[in-house]
Length: 376
Image (cartoon, rainbow, N blue to C red; front, side, top):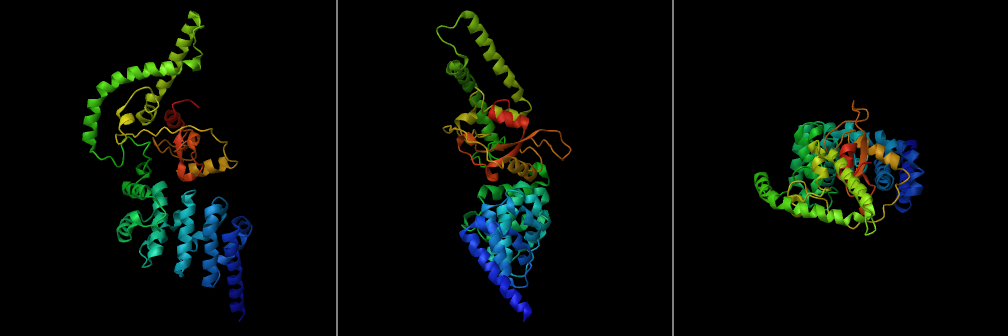
């Protein structure tokens, strides 16, 4: 009778916490320390409620939930399908921030891909897609995860499934990465790779058309250079009152500024980033599906200040990406590398890009400077 009463109390407690998490997540976060023991309750409804609280908090407070990573992992093999579903949903939300914390559970996630429960399979696919996209080296058993993920993709029509919370591009990238075999196979964003993932023409055709276009584009680049020089003259304060001596100084300064950026043309991993910012008119600037698609130039807005927890967020992104540049693969931090690693916004903050991990990636200093065409 005592056990039944204890289970009833835990069930009521978790129900209150769930209601609080749905109505006031900030207040529910204050009861985070209550959850670990409730996750091991003998009552399945109490465990389901406790994991449902984690789902709500993982949306609003992913960083604060990191302290509960081990407790969350321990419920991946729960006998209750609702508990497993909630745990997988929670991990799917948190894997954008710190997928490495859940590496020890990928074998259980693979088991969930075999589940006869449709919802559990879809959520397991979402988790393995995120971990496979960011850190394919952490997924085990790798070949089985790849086979089952492809099978579930077809069986549950993940490409058009409204319940699948992952973009198709990320699913494609995860499958590509899991096929590769190491960190170097990790997929890169479209604005970093040398060739587009979904180019409608074959690579030989793109190379041939590009070769034909380079001649007239070289001429066009010359006139573009002249136009840019005229356009940037206000920066160097050139006017009708400028003396010949000052004009010479300004010309030398403009040449020096241009020459300092030549460091961005080698190695090729960063040259292909810088060429989009240079005066050279390349085929990629004119036809978006050519190799190395040029980022769209949106209207710039005033860059907002970084959030107060930016240092924490940046550290998590470097850890998530394995302390490796996503463009050239240079290593830094604890991975026996001396490369200076930056955290870059794929969609720039000056163009209203968010400080969310889905918009963040690790670049080495050289690639980061080349991408923005300036020295930090």
